Amino acid sequence: MRVALALVCVLIACSTAPAQRASSDAVWMFVESIAWQAESPDAETGVGSVVALDSSHHFMKLMAKLRRAKAASVVSIDTKDGHVVHVGTWAPANADVIAVTSRLVEFDRIIPAGDESPGGPSTKTWTMLGPPMGPLRRTLRIGDAQFEYVERVGNGDRVLEYWSFFVLKGAAATAK
Image 1 (cartoon, rainbow, N blue to C red):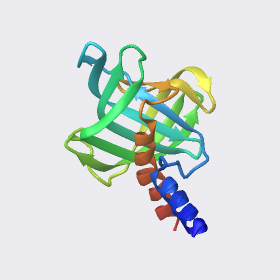
Image 2: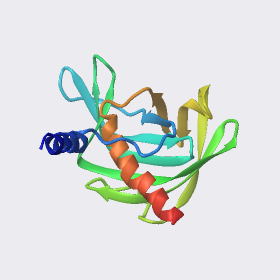
Image 3: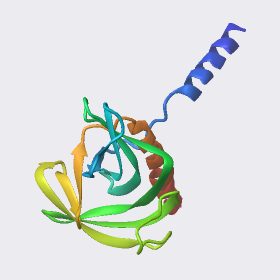
C-alpha cells in the first residue's frame, strides 16, 4: 500500500513539473528591439517577437505582446492577445550572415505580414552584428528589425512550450 501511495505521489509530482525541453541542444533567444509603451509605472508593453535558435539549426520566431518590467528589464511574452509562429532552420551563410528558411505555422488574433501565408517556406538573410557567442553574434538584424540576445526570457518556459510543440515535434514528424 505504501509503495502504491509513493508511486501515486511521484506520478502527481511529475505531471505538475514544468515542461522540459526535449532536446539537449543549446537554445539562444533574441528579443526584438521595439517601441515600448508604458502600461503602468512599473511595466512597458509592445507587440514584438522572440526568436529562438538552437545548435541543431532549428529556428522559431514567436510574435506576441511583450511585457518588460522597468526595474529588471526582463521581457516576458503574453500570448492571450494573439500570436504568430514561424518555424524552420538556419545556416551560416558567411561570417556575418545566417540564412533562415522558415514558414508560418500558426497565427491567432495577430495578422501576419502581407506577403506571408501558412505553409509556404521562404528564405531570408539575417545579418549578425556585435561580439560572437558560439556560432552566432549578440545582435541579429533582418530589414529594419533588430533582435538582441537575452540571457533569459521572464517566462521562458512559455517560449519553450511553443518550441517543443512546433519545432521539436515538427522536426520529429519530418524525420519519419
